[in-house]
Image (cartoon, rainbow, N blue to C red):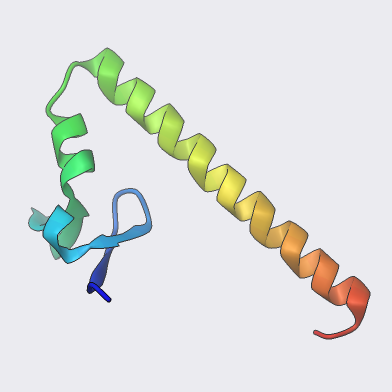
Length: 77
């Protein structure tokens, strides 16, 4: 199994090969190549990337909440 690292930008675990150290005001953090490349594109492309990422994060949160509700209904939580 390959090692994964958490990307602070898109909040997803990626394979280590897709990650780079990125310096921020708060110190060094891991960031995926996809988010680094997206940051260097036009404003329109960055906005589209951000909107896609927001939709993915919202869908992930919704699935998690649905799962938690199902577990509570079954009484096994």
